[in-house]
Amino acid sequence: MADADRLDQLFDAWREDIESVPFPQFSELLIPAQKSRARLDPASVGRLIDSIPRSLPMSNVTPWRDA
Image (cartoon, helix red, strand yellow):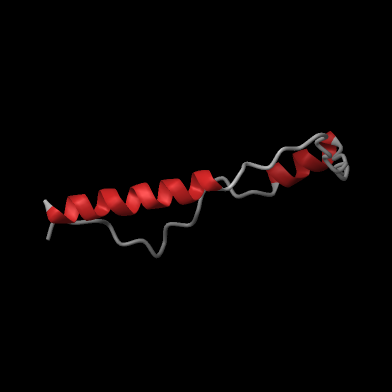
């Protein structure tokens, strides 16, 4: 029970410390402009997708067995 009381005291001290610092106030929020991304044409996307193998070779796979 003493540990719980000590944790409560530490938590209360931490909370007082956090609440003693004022939260910053912003009069105006400035968000920098984002860089634009290059557009991909559908043909290049199709070639990229077609180059992905549909399945992996299974020659080196050992079947799973109950030990």
